[in-house]
Image (cartoon, rainbow over all chains, first blue to last red; front, side):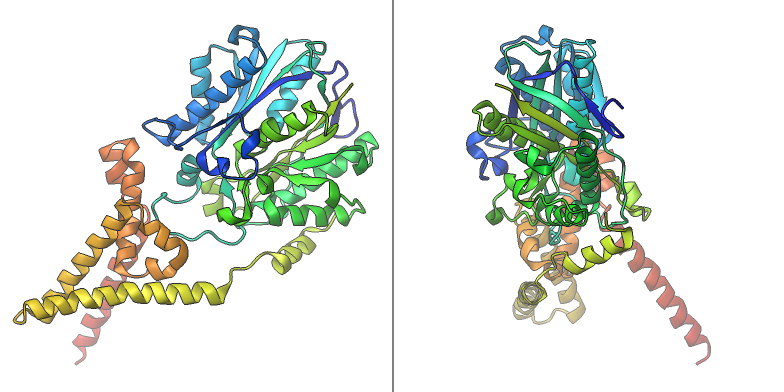
Length: 336
Length: 149
């Protein structure tokens, strides 16, 4: 790779043209409420099934971002999207309505990072002008696919996380399109499995992958943690974040002051989500709502966004497989 | 970075645990309450129909409790009770009703045959299978012992 073992530099500075986030009612009750672009009053979004609702969420995020960038769908060369449902039906079905060339992606909750990397690379290489990178997740569709029916009276375990209902989309474009937020580099994560097998302890399953990606990013770029205002992990949750920091600490990297976790930020402690939020939509709504806003107003200059994913399926857990994690790191900088 | 074994040890050591005193207490109280309601139903039947057989009363009581469990599931209340009660609301027969009705509601969107009918027993299925097979086993033992008497 052009930036070391796992890192690539985008030399032609792909820029962030706009971002859009849309969330469900529970997320709108959380601390990030003022930043979201749109909030649903009911999480079925007026649709017959939750799958249809998630699809509409995904589509709304893409069209919202296109409008926010002052563009029309014909200006977008490619939509790179993903979600958590089997065969990524949400993103493909929303692409069916949109008439934009589509690349579907899956790397669980780190899909947003993957989509940003591919989008930035396509723009950097001069292959496309603009890319819409979108991901979504929905509590009710994820629950039924990975866990139990909604009305079943089960208890959440202390390490479990709440799947975020929401969709986010970022429009990337070439440099010189009027935005001063650039995708500067990215570190493609390795799939790492430290042997966690509890599907309700995904923060712990993903923390090693996040730590590896961040450490490798710092090594490849020769940077110190202080280079970034924030290192933003996707959905490690409260406990996963603690493990992540412990792992960095064991390598002599002190990141506690500069670390934020989207899953930890999106819900309040009072909202009864033991370790915070998770899901493919988690990092994308928090990034597009909160961090993009902070970069636009200039209070944050550089962030390393590290969406994290637990690559399990219901089958693999039942067959006794441990949970591999992945984390893709994307560096954003604001230039004056 | 830490090795895998070190990491798993760390996870074991610092992972947040459930507050057992609280969960045990809640499941005891709520589970006990559900059973008390069952006992109340049974007593009422006994009072209303004094000539009814004990066995019959038991069966009617189970039916009433199953109905209540299903009704509360349909109203979206049973899962809220379950959030606090844990095993306290799973173990009684109302929990069994909940485990059948909740997937039936959930998979409505996939149609009547392949949704509701197929998926209705995804959770209760194992309970029925183990119940039936263990009664067969016990029946066999019973029969076998009877041979030597």
